[in-house]
Amino acid sequence: MARLLRKVAERRLALLVCAAAASALPGQDISPVRLRAHVRFLSSDLLEGRGAGTRGGDLATEYLASQLAVAGAQPGGENGTWFQPVPLVAVRTGADSWLSVNGARLEWLTEFAGQARTQAEVEEFSAEAVFVGHGITAPEFGHDDYAGADVAGKVVVLFANEPPSADPAWFGGPALTYYGRWTYKFEEALRRGAAAAILVHTPDTAGYGWDVVRSSWGGEEAQVKASGPALRFAGWVTEAAAARLFAASGRSVKEWLAAAGARGFRATPLGVKVSGRIGSKLREIRARNVVGRISGGAVAEETVLFSAHWDHLGMASDGAGDRIYNGAVDNATGCAIVLEVARAWAALQPKPRRSATFLFTAAEESGLLGARHWVSHPLAPLARTVLALNFDSFHPFGRTRDVVVHGAEKTPYWDTVRRVVERNGLQVAPDPRPEQGSFFRSDHFPFFQAGVPAFSVAAGPTYEVRAEQKAALRRDYAERHYHQPSDEYRDDWDFAGLDQIARLGFQIAFEAANRR
Image 1: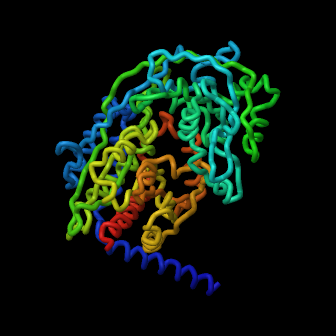
Image 2: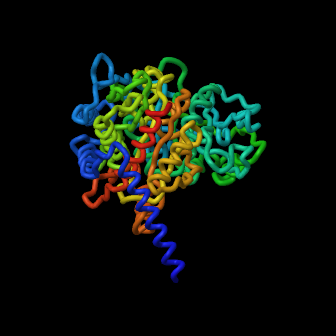
C-alpha cells in the first residue's frame, strides 16, 4: 500500500512540475471563455452553416477578419486586405437527376448522390459498367486494378478504401494511404478516360454512414472551374443499389469487396449498362481565404503558418426540420483555436525570430480547395514557410491525457513535438482510426504535398476525467452528428480541452519560429 501511495504521489508531483513549466512559457493569453464565444457565434443559425459563397460564409469571414484585427494581427491578404479570393463554381445537383441500371432507375439521395464534374447544366451518359476493385494503380506496391482493362468512355464501379493489409510492404499495413481516398479514385478514373465513376458505399469502406454521404454530397458543392476533361458523374450508390449493379454477375457486394482485396485482382465487366441524366444548378462564386500576419524579428521573411477551415455545409435546399448545418465541432472549434493563438502571439515580447501567418481556408469540405488555392497562389512563399500547423474539429468535452499529431513524424519537428508534448504532461497517442486516412483529409495535406513541413494537431482519445463517458460522447458525435444539422453548440460543453490544444500548438510553433 505504501508503495502504491508513493507512486501516486510521484505521478502527481510530475504533473505539477510539468504544469509549472508550461505555465512559465510565453503566450499564455489564451482563454476558454473566448474560445467558447467564438464557437458559439461561428456556429449560430445566423451564419446559415457557413457555406462557401453564401451570405453566412461571408459573415463568417468578416467576423474572422475583425477578430484578427482585435487580436493585433495585420492584414495578410491581397492588396492590403484580410482576404484572398478563391474563384469557384457552386454546383447543386437537381432533385430530378437520375441514374439507371439496365433501365431501372435509382432514386436521388435515397440510392445515389454526386455531381457532374463537367459543370454542364445537363449531362447525359450511357455506357457499360466495369468493376475496377478499389480503383488503384500503385506501382510501388505492384498493384494495378486497371491492368488489362480499357475503361475509356465506360462507367467504373469501385469501392473506397484499399485492400486490407497487415504487411508494411503492401499498402503500408493497416493505415490508409492516399490511394484509399475517394479523391484519388476519381482522379485515377479520369486519367483512365472513364465517363463516370461510382463508389459503392459501405460503412466500413467509407468510414461513415449513408447519412454523411447524403448530407455532404446532396447539397451545393464548390468546385474549381472546369478547364479540361472531367467525369460526367462522380458519386456514390448505396449498398442496396450496388446489389442491382452486381446482379448480372452472380456475385454479391460482399463477394466483390473480398475479390477487390485480393492480390492479383483484375477488372471485370459487370454485364450491365449504366445511364444517367444529371441536371445541375451552377453559379460562379468568390469564396475567400482570411489571412492575418504578425511580423517577426531577425528572419521575418520566413513564417510559421496556422490554419483552420471556416466553411461547413451551409443549408439543405429543402426538407422538413432543421436545415442548417451549423458545424460547431467541424470547424468552428478549429477557427476559435487559431484566433486565440493569434491573440497570444501578438502579445509576445520580444517577437519570435520568424513571422506568423494565420490562414482561415474556404471550401475545405469540397476537397481542401481553399488550402489548395493558397498553395498554388501563396501570399507567403512556400519555400519560406518553415511549418504549417492545422486545426480541424475538436470535441469540447474537457482535457485529455494525450494528443494525436497527424503527420508530425514525417517532418523535421518530430523531436520538438514530442518534447513539447512531454513538457505539458501529455503523451503522443497513435491515430485511433488509421484506416480512415485522417492525414489526407484536412488542410495541412496540400502543404505537405508542396514540400512544406505540415501536420494537424488533435486531441487524443483519453480524457482526464470520466474517460469512458466522454469516449462514448465522441463515438456518438461520429455516428450521429458528423456532417449533420445536429453538430450544434451546447452550453454544457467544456472548453478546457480546446485551451489545452491551443497552448500546445502555440508552443510547437513558437519553438519553430525561434529555431536557428
